[in-house]
Image (cartoon, rainbow, N blue to C red; front, side):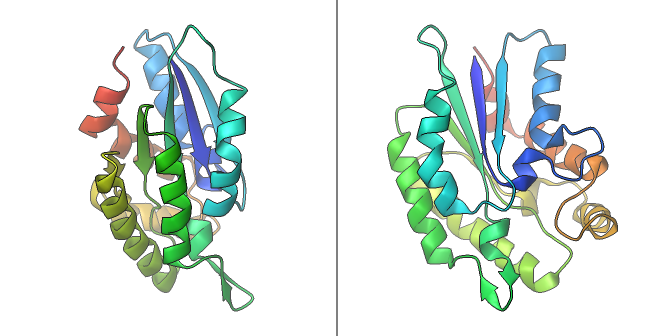
Length: 195
């Protein structure tokens, strides 16, 4: 199986001392379990939903093989909800529109969505949480499982403390491990990785 993880710098694993992020940790776990998988981390720093929606098909197509199934994991939103120089990256409605384009394009493929986690700034965290709820509702319409980090990270307080000790947005390796464990213990992920 081929797994493409598409999204932002949190998918990429920015600030992880091991340069694995949560996607790399999940893939390492699969390989350790003896699964024959090829994993591509297609997370790009500072990208928002619009950029992901514009590039995901071309980037994934370059990694597909005719004799193996490709499965997709999307995760973004923190950049969209960030405020820089007084301007928010995108509105929730814009993120929903970009996500709808993605979900409509990959209806015939196995797809998961992992929502944005909390960050150090409480207002930014509140926007991420609202976006997660809205994206979860949208994914439900398309029958795409959505992993809400606000519900699945076991200890949100410890996660936020980890982010605060890093750069306020990205966790260190320990925080990425919390995300990886949240996804790994999620039943849709367990079903997703079965042959």
